[in-house]
Length: 392
Image 1: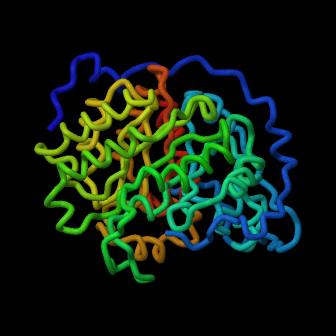
Image 2 (image 1 turned 180 degrees about the vertical axis):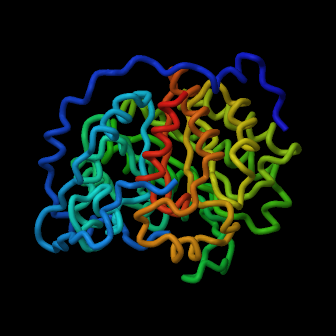
């Protein structure tokens, strides 16, 4: 395991939030961006119950032609948003869910329309100052596509973007997800730069938040050679150009899907590789908390963050642990249409709120995205997390 944290590092999670920063000046301009997304639409098929949901039987209009309108934010949501640490950008994994009617959307819209035209309304929600562009993992996006997204959100909105699987998956996979052959481009710095970093910086500009290299589950042969793989990961991150000139809030993050990375024999090496990569170009580089059953609970991942302190926070809260490591489809079927919290996870929420509070209170940025499969409804999970932060 990483070395025991110093008292200063432990106190990280008890720090107080910083004073609020000035509000963004160009939110209205973003609201006027074109909603004609066409082929640039977000992919609609990537992988304590609230009272805010409309009452049963309440008619909601379904529109396929009118612009997507944002649901009005009530006084509680506005107050919670105003109290959030200004360095926290919280959001969801994509935005194309019709079940969010009354939570994010004013009315009832088709999934295809939300995929194409919903981002402007999504970004109007006071709590949602970020979103994860998960579709970038399946196919690299162009600078033009990134710029289209950036034009639809306010000045202080930040995107979390996953690197393409071409870079992050050790295997070339069939349509059913099974590995077919080794991927010769795995961890290629040249490919990462050309197909991910450069287009994202060019298209999103200062709205780049976290650029996440999510390493897919590794085959046994790779797991058997983890020290060498960690060296390659460090070299990849060290080779990325400085983000600050284009994206002052930009962060590089490493997410892993194998708990072996956190084992006592490997975690210190991983922490050192990330620290060394930071020094190469001066980029903020961190470990991304991945909250799902393939990885240990959040409290068992925190020692690695402490070993990297001080630094930013990136967290992707993906799946409730009760569904197991391969339970995404069962969770999707159970939780749809994602309009209420079905499996509240107050323990994870409390840990996460404490880490956010300490990170932002020390002047570091925090990017947290939540999946519908974490508790049943990502916008309501964001609401409850904001309430938890307000109690600290």
